Length: 108
Length: 118
Picture 1: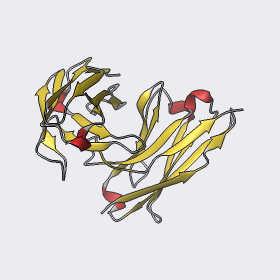
Picture 2 (picture 1 turned 135 degrees about the horizontal axis):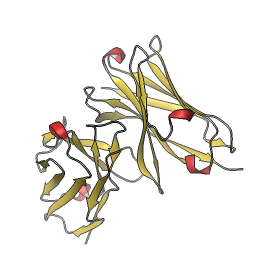
Picture 3 (picture 1 turned 120 degrees about the vertical axis):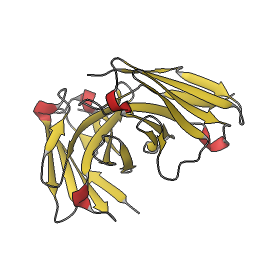
Picture 4 (picture 1 turned 180 degrees about the vertical axis):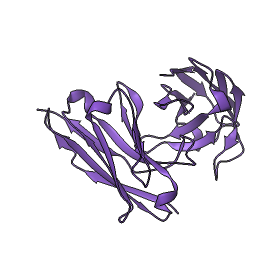
């Protein structure tokens, strides 16, 4: 199965700063079938980005995704207070679908 | 607006069978694949398996021998059974909609904590 490694584990930032989160796959993700989710405590994950760079419905444009092959990035340009949460990447190019371990974005 | 509501037993003893159901409201049930995903502190998010309206299923090889996913299209519901549970199966279980048969998930149930303890 494809292993997704996210870094860093924790990102300590202040509101307004730019957040850059990384996700590396153990093998090439053909078609860029890589999604990003946001999860807040006690809630289900929320789809932010799919196919590496397409924002899901209703997602603000401060969230952007990029990358291809094995290296992908989620960027939050200007953190809002509600953006402090845990972020996961997930691949769906091969079954079983797998998730990364997550990056926690916390208030510095 | 699509809503997924899930229910099932929350406390099990080792060797029992986990049983959860997810009901879908507000969308064409037959147009999508529907998945079960679980989350535990030890293993993070883990995709369990999926089903479509015709009953075609796929599941994670790590759980395949113990997993049954079924569908009731007349009720817009799908269900998960996981046999012979152990403490390692303790997790929050989510149902979710596969957005466009692309393997990413745009609508999720509220989650159900299932604890396995003797």
